Length: 149
Image (cartoon, rainbow, N blue to C red; front, side):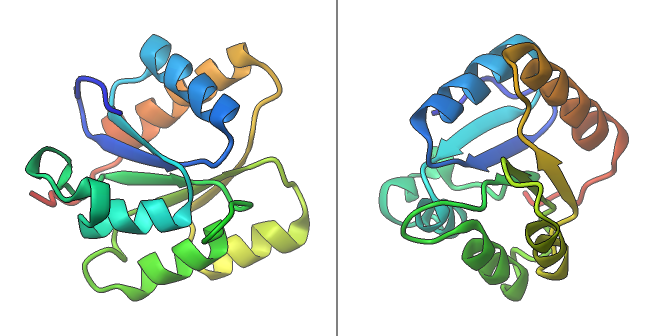
């Protein structure tokens, strides 16, 4: 699932279908980057390695940013983050953790594994739209990202 790009591309790994829908709606309202949604860490790794349902050319890209939930089935966020940061071609992609957990253990572990940011999921749709605006402003208008093409 994707939207017209303006500045870059973002892949979000989120297992909760309601949260994926909210993120999609928030991105349509406030986002600038091309958005791809995947269901879990295993799906994310398929996307990044252009395997399975992501093997066609239209989706064979390296995203500029990854947003990652921690608590997912099959392959959780920690496992995906560890795998991303261990891979020579993927390790430079910034990973932002977006989780309901505010536990110090989860925050510390995420940074230790290579996350560049850790954000708590907002409590309302308006807060989510504002978060999307802030993320777009920072990651796709302010920060200089490597060109992966």
